[in-house]
Amino acid sequence: MKALIATDGSQNAFEAAQLFSRLPHSGPLEVHILTVIYMPPDDSGGMAYAWLPEFIQTEEARAKEGFEKIAALFQGEDVVTNHMICHGHVGHTIAEEARKINADLIVIGAQGHTAIARVLLGSTSDFVATQAGCSVLAVRADHVPDPVGPLRVVIAYDGSKPAEAAIDEFAASSWGPKCHVQLVHVLPHASLFSRAVAVDVATAKREGEKLIAGVVEKLRPVVAEVSTHLLEGDAIGPVISDFAKAQQADLILLGDTGRSALSQLFLGSVTRYVLRHAECSVWVSRAHRDSE
Image (cartoon, rainbow, N blue to C red; front, side, top):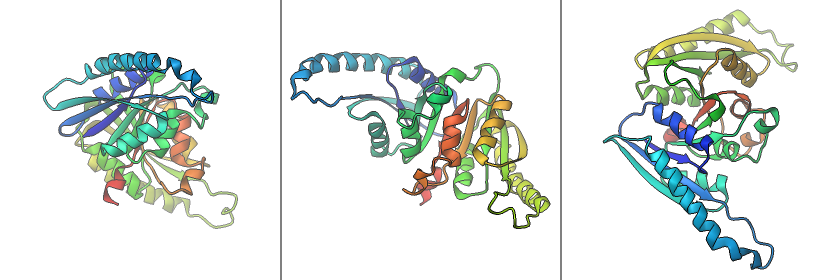
């Protein structure tokens, strides 16, 4: 597995790396620890850049300290760590460097979750999580799992190709006896536009139960406990987020449903809603892109 951990030297970034270090991985692990030094535009004809060399030197020294702290989390014969320092737009650079190294996963800290912080479209974590070409683990540092207790994971599954690939990505590692999974399938209520159409709710529930039954068999060998939940609601994103909150989940896993230019405009999409509103960490799987 090849992972890129984005860090700015903050405690938030360190705790994101710390959570990832506790998760299982399949095969050798290659960890690239990336620090991006933002270079602000100079509108003064270059006069303001007299401080630049000192600024870069200070930031690079801080980056090296952050690298050593994170690298210490990853010890073992099957782990290789590498430090990368780049200059530029933070979000763009993280996504681009991940593409260059062909990363399987980006690990990044997600800032706080006040109502305002969750909807900041310009935040780095939001940008990376929605624009990166690989899977992304956005970690809420203010909701760090108990290292002693079981890891509580909610997996959202709708039977789509991205959801199926997310299950396969998760099941590729042995999560062990301290991982409890709650597999969720959401049956959305009929919209105002379609309520005139007769819907056989009983049939939809039976199909949903059949859909998730097969997934349970994939998960049983790699986790201690799997439970299934058939939920209903007017919108899928809020149902998943509210369920995870009620269950005090540590992590939500879901497959990204679309990467087209048009799909990125729908801010109400399930992936973006969960990213912005979930109170726990979120793993957006894009493993399905490997086969496209």
